[in-house]
Image 1 (tube, rainbow, N blue to C red):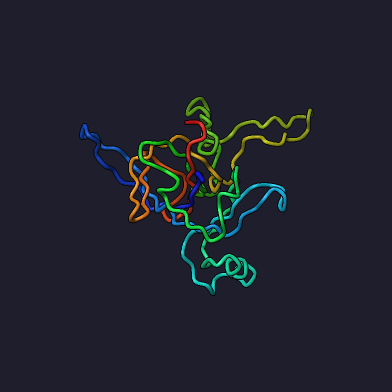
Image 2 (image 1 turned 45 degrees about the horizontal axis):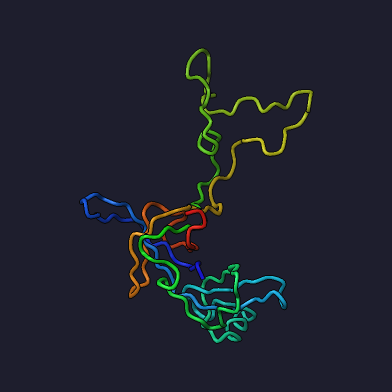
Length: 210
């Protein structure tokens, strides 16, 4: 098992041996519980479902309550399915803590939902340079310009970079150095920033390219 769920608490800084400030993101990683184990012969693929986060039982609907009750696990706020190579290594109700998955000095990948930024123009959304500020340009400095819908092809191609909703996307940040692991408080410190707002759920795994 090389994946665990966590909650992004925020950013701070610590100092290394050379008294240099190191920016770190603090994550409350786990504990997680295995709710279901999926086998290739029964389900067609290998995976496990892991649950994380506190929630009141009345906030969970009856079918999901039954799903947790069958596993003998308390209802959780988040339920995520993760692919694994050997599902027989896990059992329903098993508890997973951060020290089982990650260790200090290694690299990790973090997946989260980026902050929503609302409706944005092309300069912020797609890094357009904008139009000239002089030579007769009148209040069109941040406009996108022509989108190419002439007599031919008489339409706008799909995928044209234009203004629109920005953020709220699943983003994965690769190869973050694990600066510290606090097994007693289930805290994980990663060098640098991770996607998402404070309090949001993130998925942390061992680096696949590191």
